[in-house]
Amino acid sequence: MSEKIIETKVCKCWEKFDITELDIEFLDKLSPIIANQKFQLPTPVLCPECRKFQRLAWRNEKKIYKRKCDYSGKDIIAIFPPNSPYKIFEDKVWDTDSWDAKNYGKDFDFSRPFFEQFSELLKETPLPSRWVRFTENSDYCNASTSIKDCYLSFSVNSSSNLLYCVDVVRCNSCVDCFWIVDSENCYESILASNCYNLEYTYDTRDCRDSQFLLSCENCQNCYWCFDLKDKKYCIYNLEYTEEIYNKKLKELMQLWVQKRKSGFEEFYKWKYIKQPLRNIWSENITDSEQVINSENVSHSRHVLWSQNIRYSQKMQVPPVNLAMDYTWFWNNAEKIYYSQQIWNNASSIYFSVGTFNDVSNIYYSAHCRNWANNLFWCVSLKSGESYCILNKQYTKEEYEEIVPKIIEYMKKTLEWWEFFPATISTYWYDDSVCQILKPITKDEAIALWFSWSWYEAPFPKVDKIIPASKLPEDIKDIPDDILNWAIECEVTKKPFRIVKPELEFYRKHSLPIPERHPDQRYTDRLKRYINY
Image (tube, rainbow, N blue to C red):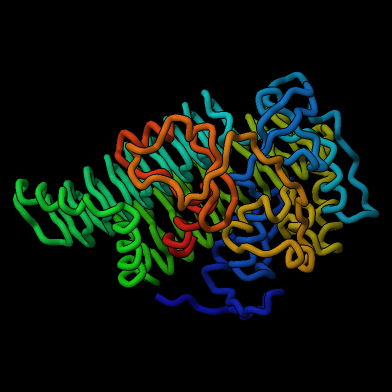
């Protein structure tokens, strides 16, 4: 059902976008009450796509660096390069009581723009080296919690033995996968749920022991099939007896895997280009994709077990109730507006990034956690901090007196209800998710007033470099000392390494060594994943 248009606006990108009756309804429900006064949320001035990218500019998901901890001086892994202007503490140190973020508190200056003051606070207050919780032997991971023995995997929850995976929940022993849940022994799988032993698949549920599947459900022992449900022993959607299936499969396996893969990808492009992802077990869904067990969702992507969601993406662990312009969520949130990366029991969060663990009534804040509440314009506060403005402590009465005055001032500076500008983001454009989804050159970024890192990581020490084209096709011909080599990516020419658990996985599954850099492989997967 179409929505009633109230107003049509023009974004700064020159795209027209509509403000509808449902937008007004959501904004009214989300409008916060501060000091017994309701502050009505105005309609957005940017189109939904620009609002999304404005949030993504504040997320570095998978760029990591070796650098020094600014607290201990020890070598650490961080999502900030060594030349970052921010004060970076090792995440384990940052999460302790050995320092106090209130020591960096400031008075609000009514003669200067708010974003200028907040940018200064960001640069002075320590930030965590990575966003991780409860990890074991997973130093090269970020944006993850409760993980073990994972390597270069990001946005992962309750999983183990992962390599080069992104957006994973409750999985084990998977490599090069994207957005998979409750699955094991999967390789090059995108959008998989409750699957086992899959290779080269897209959009599968309850499948096992199969290769090259597209949009299949409850299938096992199938090869190069699409749109199948409750099937066994199928090849090219034709069903066989187990004996004939095994015989034909053995013949097909004689073909070089890269030839089979390229043929399958051509088929994928022909059949699935511009096809929307399916919505499952959901009600009242509008202009949305991959919505599961949810209701009242509009203009959103990848929403699980949530309700009353609008212009939002990536809600992986349930539930969320009442959210608009929201990206990346973990576990139980309510009443969220124009924010990103909100985790674990959060409510009434506005224009904030990286806040989690029993937080509420947070406004224009970054990286606050652990029972923090009633915070305005704060950085790195935690452990029950309340009634703070720019990291300075106030009484409840002082807080409720000052906040409305600051709001009125920010209305005059046209900053009230505007999200943090990308120009003060803690991540440069080339480190943020923006560069993954919308790659631009350094000169283009600077022309658009984005920052750029300028940092070049040192080349790793290796015994030799081998072009990917020179790799043996059969994993049996790969020697153990490949672990000491660098492989030159066939696309980007960037060198990459093979680690021991990775080599063991390829040998176990009779898979060839990849010919592309992990970053390029991720980019390839995103191209197949429609409408990120």
